[in-house]
Picture 1 (spheres, rainbow, N blue to C red):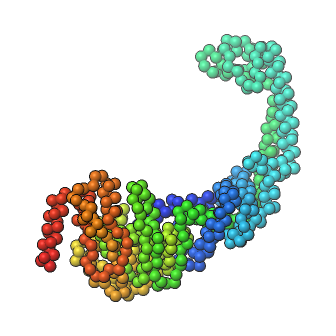
Picture 2: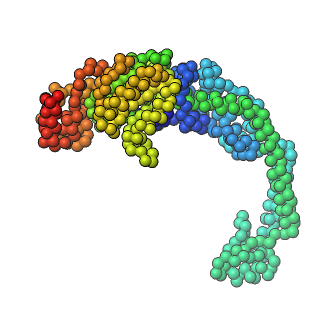
Length: 531
């Protein structure tokens, strides 16, 4: 169910800053492992801390990054990949060796980054040349012998060809030089063909392709060269098979190297991400412990507000009870609170440091979000039906420790039924101690004593009234600035009062006509008087 949580908290935007350098690290990023073991997570955090310390030496860190970028994936098809596959093995080992020399002993030990393939690399080095790899003479005496024979044959063929072309030039005036053919006029070619020195092929109207007729000695030697080339191919294949046998013999060591590369890449890339985004190490607590948040930032909103030139208010709060119900203003930050905690928890249990000065929480087996996902579709279901189906899928995971986040649950039905459904969910969550529930809602429902009643601080009405004179801010940017200026995004205990009702103020700022706002205010006053 982490997929619903990831979509709700826009986790893909967080992951966009995570840039592994190797194919192994990128494959792990796509898998998106969610860890439910505190021990595994602490190991990953320790590695991230270790690489953060290592990266303080920028020169060594840059060198490590260069070698990791140049580590390819080892060919999955092994020997059938032929010389091209051996090139990848050689490149892998060369860069692994260089990277291993850069790592301090503690990090090398924790990642398993040990150099154990010296013999295999020494063998493959015989075919390395200027960053490339080929089946070199050094791999096979038979291969070296046949290549010498081919070279000697080529010299002899070149001599016979030069002698033949000189004779043609003397008799016909045609100078082929280093060319295999010439294009000449058809009438001239006809005379030359009769001499037996050349033959022709059609080219276009009035012209033909002219090629020299080589001597029997040249043709015989050329046939010998083809035989030698076939022998060379067989020798290369045999040498390649022997090299692959050597590689296969080191398969266990190579697999250990692959695992080390992945672990090193992940930790190193996460350490660089932590530095770039000012992330901190999560503190993992025992089951049932409070979720404590200090200086937490919801990165997508922080970036958007920055683009608008608006300040961002980090989240500081401790969720002490297992069940939390959050009320508050429209646009007051309820959803952002839920998204922030979801992002922090998902990041922490994916092995990342988190965008907060401090974050401490238990480890859950599952993480799910129920919200009005616009992409959630099922044939025959209304918006309400889709929401209930989403809840059913999430609740099915409540047989193990589950952090369940619910934003505006039952928003698509009437207030009375929505409040009743929320009460039912809370009652069920009280009896199921596997569930850690965080629910944001506009609706008021009786809360069990096991639930914490929370509210967003909302608008500062006195400051707003002093500022607002009935004039609507021009442009969306200015409207948002006005809302942001007077909205208090903090979270506090709800003492049971009705809390702020800011919808009309926000509607006015966003440009709803003043006559509509005044009519709405009169209606509220009349309803309050009747109550």
